[in-house]
Amino acid sequence: MSTTVNTSTSATRSAAAAQHARKDVWLRRAPLLPALIFTIIATQIPFLITIWYSLRSWNLLNPDSDVFVGFRNYIGIFTDSTFRQVAMNSVLYTLGCVLLAMLLGIGLALLLDRKFIGQGVVRTMLITPFLIMPVVSAILWSISMFNPSYGLVNWIIGLVGISPIAWTSQFPFLSVLIALVWQWTPFMMLLVLAGLQSQPKDVLEAAQMDGASALHTFFYITIPHLRRYIELGVLLGAIYVVNTFDQIYLMTAGGPGTQSANLPYYIYQRAFLGFDIGQAAAMGVVVVIATIVIATVALRLIFKSFMSTEQ
Amino acid sequence: MTTDTLAPPANPTDTDRTTRPARPGGRRARSAALTAFTWLVALVFFMPVLWMVLSSFKQEADAASNPPKFFFTPTLDQYAAILNAGTGEYFLNSAIATVVSTLIVLVLAVPAAYAVSIRPVGKTQDVLFFFISTRMLPVVAVIVPIYVVAGRIGVLDNIGTLIFLYTAMNLPLAVWMMRSFFQEVPKEVLEAAQMDGASLMTTMRTILLPMVAPGVAATALLCVIFSWNEFFFALNLTAVNAATVPVMLVSTMTSEGLFLAQLSAASVLASLPVVIAGWIAQKQLVRGLSMGAIK
Image (cartoon, rainbow over all chains, first blue to last red; front, side):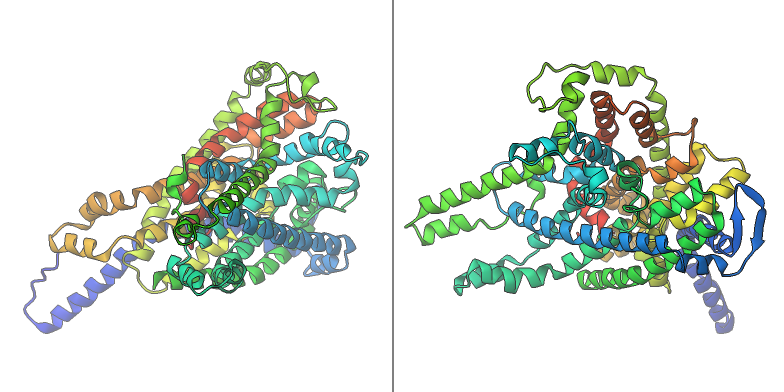
């Protein structure tokens, strides 16, 4: 960008400078605009339409039903006991998966955070469940692992004398939860491992010199250091896990009844099997509001993380 | 193969051996036991994947047997059957949706990340906040209007629709991740280039892009992982023409649910591209999944 401005009077010079500055601001902004405009079109407009639909009673099977009903869909949601049950399931799946995966992830990360033979291979094996296509992981668990007659899990528990269990129909919630924890443990492990490896070595050595036991070092130095990583893992994990659909769709179809359904699955059922657009849209809006609450906390944390790493 | 990506931790056994030479044997035994335990845990954790791979090389009768068969004559029959069943089209659809959306994401995200990190103007934080908040928008909240509108304008069962949605899905992640790479570029380098009279485009092309190239690769890999594995949009918005690999798997499962060996072979093929990509990009995985917050 040329900076030579040929002006004789100071007045025109400052005017030109101001114009130049304005142009400069727009030049700086310009690279951002395509991405910003695309994102607004792709995400905000559909969401506004969702809000519009949520105020109408529209069933695809009955085209005449499309009339404005105000908040009736929302009232319907809060008096719907299935919705409450499914919302509770969503909370339980998310909390259960995130907490169990985090505990396992911390354990695995501690095992990995030392030099040993085949470290790279072990780490590669451990992250694989996270890379496997979720649809494949759901098929894998519901058929290869949990099939009542030839699944591997029933064979293993049979070795210790437990009779076969029809996992996905007797314990649908637990079955889905196991598949989810299996998928998300590597995610937590990777974040915690990154935390462990960023520990200042001199502090650990100093603690050892001072005669602190391994347990003391772990609880008073390592855990406080890991806190940021654990919080980040829990919150990011929660945001992803809340949206779980594939495992529920394939392993239990939310059943029996809606016993193992979560909100995304229930909304899918209402929209694509019940064709109840208005009701499904209203549920979507409620889910977004709930997510915003969680996400605000998560975002504040991520920003905090950024600020501390950038200083 | 990946040990070099790990920061090697200070080996406590080495220092201990010099200061406390009394019980080297005990320590070594404990270390060996811990290693064995780690391997055992990893194998248990990996078992389902291993079992799927084994099943894919079995005959159907061996795959669905009780007790399970650990020793069998391996066969490629199932892979041949899957490849001959016309699955190529699904793989092609997945590949197109994944590659094209990833390219569009990069074209949009790299300049955007540059704008918010190298020469930011006001409100940068708000823009970043907005981007990431869209990644947290539950897809179920927008699937209804997307389905209705796509139906009205005649783009249901169209690969272009998936490309559009996958781009929207990955863009926020890519902007955040690229931002974290741009921020690592030392300001002095850019200032020096400007002093030397290099134009913005030249600086971009000859200095900036080569420096963030590894970041672009890592971002692309993450976008590939998420697009390739995506199921919800593909299930609801495609039918015959644009169906992707996960949709194919689900229809295989419901129509031929009993053919476990064949289903396993299809599953292995479906997972392979992303698993390999992820294995290669282990280190970048952490950074991408934490939206660049952890390096």
